Image (cartoon, rainbow, N blue to C red):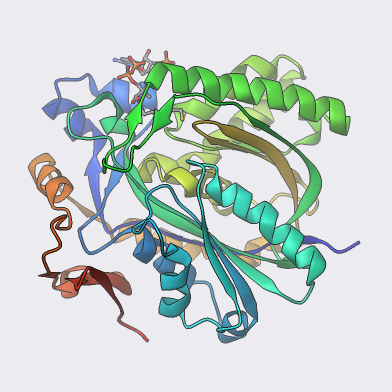
Length: 391
Ligand code: COA
């Protein structure tokens, strides 16, 4: 049987960040609430020269070689903060990366679940077309607003996954459980550039979906916690996955519990420093685990819990491949984190309010201040102007 899964993983976050203890001080909140209660240390801050398209394109740019660019025949862009109601963000990325024109390019939306739908679609496509490669993107800018309860859980970033046959990093298994229910826990009406959230309800539903899906998964697969090296979670903030995992840990031995807890902690490292990146969040957590933990034996099973408010949830699994560590971009990601620049709270507030004109007027940005390869250079004739400094 053909193995299909993740061949490469790229990641990009904006070059600016805010220290959560400083945000806490300015909001008159105990810093422990943000760093321990919510579990966030730094929040990515997005300059106006980045949007969900450029974040995704930058994440993909670092991993694709010329052969990939020729072979990719499907670009699937998961986002809930897209830039256009008609044209898909995938078409812009396809052009910015210089991909083979004989390709499909679409956008998928279901809150933070979109990239997971993309991965499952990619898997089906490759099963039918084993020589093809699919680029799946999860890219978002999480905005709740200044001085809102959601503010501490903002963030921005993108993950790019190259899905192929005989993958170098992880082979996806077929067993998966997915679940849908109409719930108003988080939404963003088309007139708003900030999300609305019923925070308590979203926490409850995230946990309830995990509990339901996990029970169903165990019944269908015959597997249990002991069969997992780690379980990674969609992380709107890093405490969230812990809240879902805790109630089921009693199903297994102390030793397995310790393993899952330790690996959970490692899987939150990148997310703690970036914040919520919506569609890419689960895959940033997976990346954090496999880049920051010592190498796991080939064949180790990793669980992935995807949750998109509204709501759709899915639990699926993958097996790490022999030598997977050699195919990761650990150095680039260390450098990305090390080169970020801290902004003050007033600077963050100014950047937050600096948005594109909504009255059709034109604007041009100096992209030299943004170290990213791919940037938004402005808007003219109601069209976004993108630049790839290296193309
Ligand atoms: N030291 C340590 N922990 C503290 C603390 C302190 N001084 N003060 C509060 N906390 C803890 C609370 O006990 C709570 O922990 P718990 O959830 O384990 O009980 C946690 O910090 C958060 O406190 P809470 O009062 O519930 O926060 P909040 O009402 O300000 O909102 C969210 C938190 C996540 C609901 C809010 O940020 C939000 O709406 N985010 C957007 C939606 C979202 O991310 N949903 C997730 C599911 S998709």
